[in-house]
Image 1 (cartoon, rainbow, N blue to C red):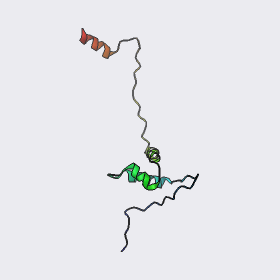
Image 2 (image 1 turned 90 degrees about the vertical axis):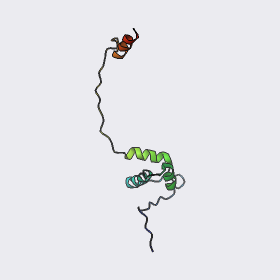
Image 3 (image 1 turned 120 degrees about the vertical axis):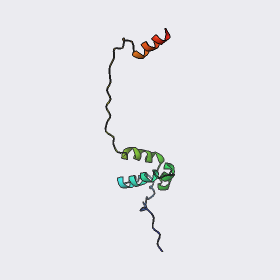
Image 4 (image 1 turned 45 degrees about the vertical axis):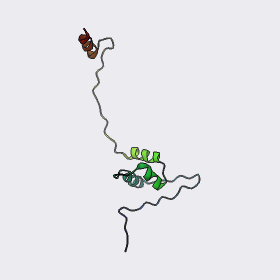
Length: 94
């Protein structure tokens, strides 16, 4: 009888003294997807792969789809002119 895991396991070799491990973008995505499972803990997933939790936070930011920039309309008012909010408060006070 063979047991199969639901997803392929990722072999992560331990980092050697003075050496860094490198992960492909596909491996990073696969690890990040595990953090998004219900009940999953980012720190637990990081420990499982021997990665610092802050690296997973960084990968999540780097791999997040880029949103289109949002533009908003800005009105520049004269600094000496009374603000509508201030004038309405003054009207209520009198």
